[in-house]
Image 1 (spheres, rainbow, N blue to C red):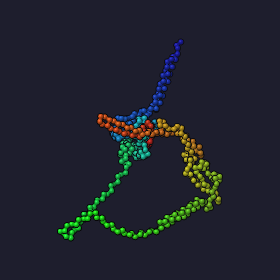
Image 2: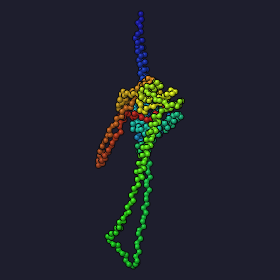
Image 3: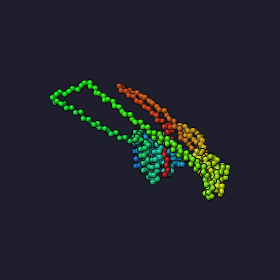
Image 4: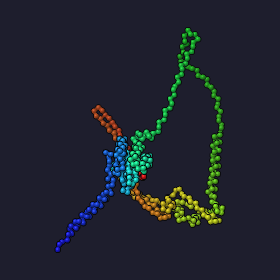
Amino acid sequence: MPRPLRAPLSRLRLRELSLIAALLGWVWAAEAVSLRRIEDPRPRSWVVDQTGTLSRSTIAELDRLAARVKGNGGELVVVVVGSTDGADSRRFATDLGNRWDLDPRGVLVFVATEDRSAEIILGHSVDSTSQVRASQRIMDRELLPAFRAERYGEGLLATAREVERTILAPPREQAAQAAPPPSPPPPTRVAQEQPAPATPLLEDPGAPAAEPRANTVPKKPAPRRSKPAKQDDSTWPAFGCLGSIIFGVLAGRRLLKGSFRLLSRRPRCKACGVDRILLDEAEDDAHLSAGERAEEDVGSVDYKVWACPSCGDVLKKRNQRFFKSHRKCPSCGYVTLSRVETVLFEPTTTERGLVEVEERCENCGRHVSSRHTTPMRIESQPATTSFGLHSGGSRASSSFHSSSRPSSSSRGGFSSGKGASGKW
């Protein structure tokens, strides 16, 4: 009787299982290294186009602009991909710039054509409030209009030029752009030459000229008695100020009385012409809906209910409070939605923080819980000062260098994600 072939079958199953495990590992690795599939183009180029959208001339012009930016101390990189596979484009672009360790004084322009999204990521050294606003203006005025017209190359070239001009310009050019125009110099006065005094004619032409007396002191003119100025006893300014104060007090008093009468006046019923009466809190609940009662319970809105004693008509007045702790619920439309944020993990200099947001409506029972990350904490590096003395033969030189710019590691890499976003 032949023996069953168990060993070959078991080996076949092991091979199948190992093949399945290898395929699963390959799929997991493909998802995990999505950033690794985008290679850093530097130093041979500053542009990555995985979709073939840009022409060679456009890429060459972008490289020329980026090389000029690099020569001025900055960095400009353009990346065009198909899709981020569902990942947030801002987070994806920021992680890509940090992975490549771009210069903190640099900008990454990121485009995902299939997702129809674009990002302008600013480095730590160029992410001030004014520069963030400038990046959003560039996104709205240059990139998005061109992309909506399917002029991708023109849009990226215009974006790169504006980024170079407004964000990555050399410090001297930025100071020149921010400085006000110089004021014209004051007009110069030309001094008028006074003619020399004429020499008095002598009565006798043959007689010698009289020599001037030495140490002659000119006589001082007799002091004149000035007439006492008339004192201005006019008190019109004082009377004017006093009159203005009295008029203001009287006008304010009259205005307050009119406002009080207007507020305290009862609304009149349009049907029968009788003054309405204000219902108390217990009586007005019968005329309020469940959502309106919930708004009064949480203190976000105060309702005043006026009823006509003759015909029974009811008038509701809604007074929403300015300082309230609830907001409008997107489900029911009443101001009964509370929002509570809980910090689960504090951000550090190397890891992002995690915050849990819980929204709950006191009227319809809506309950939504979500989590989002917070940027890494930026730790400033103290200024470092170095002094060196170099001597060679009879020549000596000294140099003093002070640097207060934080390193990329202390600020969490290239960027924390500030910049501009857009979709077309």
